[in-house]
Image (tube, rainbow, N blue to C red; front, side, top):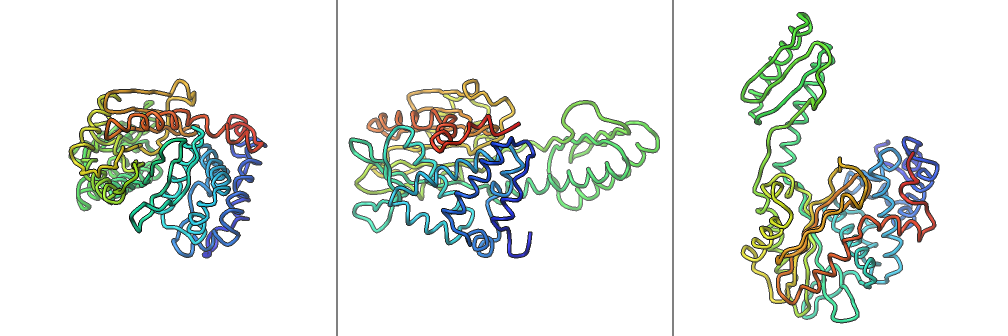
Length: 402
């Protein structure tokens, strides 16, 4: 890739038969062509020049199984939104180039529009809030009274990324030790320590790896950082690297985001907040150990007690962000629905190999009907892509791979 960044021709050339059928290759190139049409010939270079990145799904669609379905959804959602006059302003903003936060925000808008279409409900983009100079993100327009939706994402925090960088560094050094001494290391981290202690610990790992290679005997290093078992031959089956236990107060960042949205949605019209949490909120907090219904009750209690909502706030739709699914791709098997007096829990495949958990929490008794609408809208999310592909005259997802 040149210093000017990727080109549409380069992206198209990266689509190969690596796990894709002929139909898959054709579908990938169709999706790239649709984004090229909607965003413009010069968009890739402009996006890269202004912000230094392009969406990784574009770069991976021809080689990674999880990326192609996402790219196809993007192309199909753009096609659908293009016929809505109020989307013109959003598309103009996209064509100018977007930072990562704005990019995520825009696709969440498009996702909610697709959810509305699942219920046969029209919607419009960037509606004015009556009595305010601000605009909402969407207006859902059922046959009866409409309501606004404000969308936002909670990205990964600096601490989370620093945690990942630390463990990536440890893994990289250990793998180099393995290559140097022709050994296999099984690492279990207990904690993260400062740079000097980490460097010394890795130095000792290297020394012991040399000893294991020369002696032909297994060596074990134990310490505050963790445990490394060094095998001169192949290691037993199982994970070769286990990161340190990680836990955090996930509510702090989410609560701050919701407090801002509570101010923004104030007005005469009913409003919902749609939040996609990408920071490990569900995976890395105590919520991960709870049963779905218990999680709904816990989250609902926080939403009611910790945030000062305006009178027109009807509810919150909170999701975990897509995560890799290791339990199979049967959508019916993976689907879980839980209900309590506090709201609705959904676990669904968003695309093949990706799963997400969604919590729908009404903030008042008047919002129960809306909550049922959200549950219906997102309940059949696994079917969205095949439905949209068929409407575009394209094969089903299952026919895109070999």
